[in-house]
Length: 335
Image (cartoon, rainbow, N blue to C red):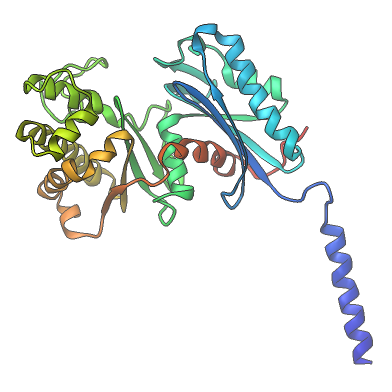
């Protein structure tokens, strides 16, 4: 009698499994596309963060809008065609510049002038016959670090990207904090030197003008080190050049002021720094951390962390792929 009951229960369980099984959907994945200043990269990534397939190519903005849009569409179609559309949960597209989130339009971007004011999200949705989520590159990088990088253990973090300029992204509750227009996270324009160096945004003393790669070169030039790159200034500092070391001390102080403001404002557990300038971490981080300790009581007295990001230039791609998981219901987008 017991054996019959066991067989009956096992049979019912097997039938339930068969009813739930869909042979056309073996796994779920998203597609992320990162449109950078010199290249276009796209990847299909599954729910665990595993990259299933990737495509990459150069970008030639001089050819105009239509060839660029065609390259974006082609890259996504290639991945979707290879992996099938039934398991596709969404498409995230990351671009530099200010995004009008409601309209899906790039409002301002030095690198994407040909796409400014153009309804790129709607155009991609029409071409792909699937919903597309558009996001700023720094915001996406912050989201990527939260998903698969240094921030995976927290739901609240701030990312500063240190490159030619300084960008930023804020993650709150596991999602990008946009503000009411989508302009939250313009962290490079925090004032750290009242009446300091003029910035293209119209302000003076922005941290971008005192702690970016461009700022390092400018300070080195004023110090009499010549026309040098930030990397060359770093090599001079490592070699013991006192003027080069002072450049990074000034840079670290400016970053520390900005970070102290962020720590005091958000009270988040984690603040990350990424970008090419991070290679000089051993030169600028000691004065940076000293400045944060001096200016932030909560940093001095809690376990708040300021660390290097870990994903490098892959952060934006991971963030793009993660957008559909946090921005829309998890339902197949196949049409």
